[in-house]
Image 1 (tube, rainbow, N blue to C red):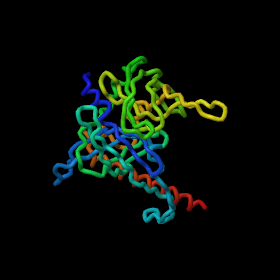
Image 2 (tube, one colour):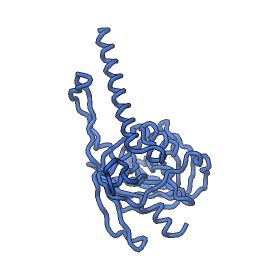
Image 3 (spheres, helix red, strand yellow):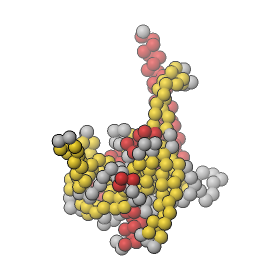
Image 4 (cartoon, rainbow, N blue to C red):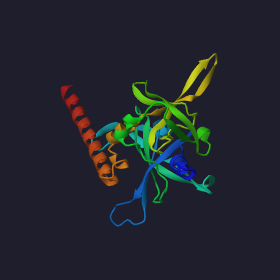
Length: 277
């Protein structure tokens, strides 16, 4: 892989994400023409990140639900701000554009989220998730690259190796690497150095309590395991992000149907409880 390819694979797809209280990282995993009838020259763009990067944009309030005919806790999502960077002469950051983005889906347990840019602009550089049948080929000592916005800096990359393949933290699987990472890297990309494929989402670092302070071990970083990324996307009906046979509008129809079924199931449960009182 030459220098230009490394920039295209590891650096250019990385974005900076702002919530109300913090900044983190993300990677552009999808940008394809909008297939909606009558729409021309418009693009749909999606970013993968951590839930905790955007969690303060999600709130809950008790409001009247017309379907349930009752008060229930409802969810409200503020928009995130996603900063996309442009480069000249390969390495020189020339400019950046900040886009509003909707939180399409998230999972607290997986600590993953997907954002949709509120813009028809084409984002030229995207990353590709490692195919599921290649995950078992990952081995210790494989070279990896972590790309992100450490401490809210412009995107940059660190080199390292896979050091543990299935670290279990809170019953969730992570890849461990010795590529330096710190606060702000969360939500960025862990890439296989040989191919440029996305193999994880940097999510946690190691901290050791020393007296009254905390020592951060930057070379013990943990990224969401690729199997978890696939599980998250499947559970959220977002297969179109890795499967060309699916598309955005079919996925949104499935999500709406699943949400309505869940609300109807809740309504039935409430009615059952009221009948037994």
